[in-house]
Length: 143
Image 1: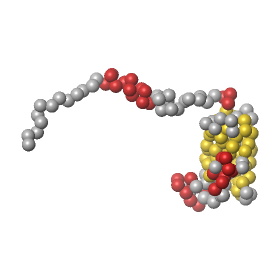
Image 2: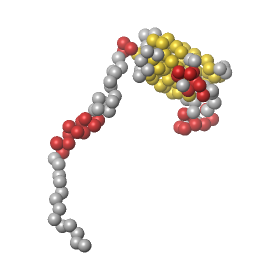
Image 3: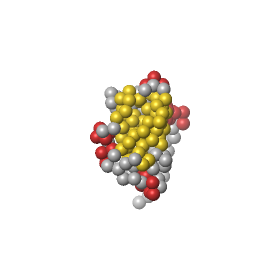
Image 4: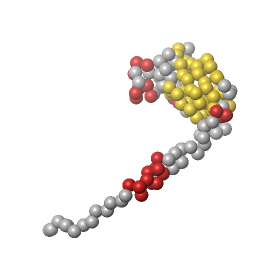
């Protein structure tokens, strides 16, 4: 069998590919940005998460708008139990808390097992009302 010697190499000028590259990395093409965040529908919140009276030493807390579930923010729980989010959705929010992420990428000695229902906002039983401006020193006491 003879190798094919008479073949053509197709070369496309780079400038013809530019529109495709721009579309590929555009937020609208990726499905992001269908609802833009604005200061009018977001607020800062910070505080502490405790379980059985002691600060959780890791994990995450998520705030999900009751009326617009696509509006949500998740932030890490620090080793002292504190959390802080600059862009939480305003109004009534469902709250979910999980600690399993500590086992995946954090310090395993900070892991505290909490009941699984807290990881699901719809089943956690934890809610809060976020007002415009600063929402400081909020404590979520899990039992």
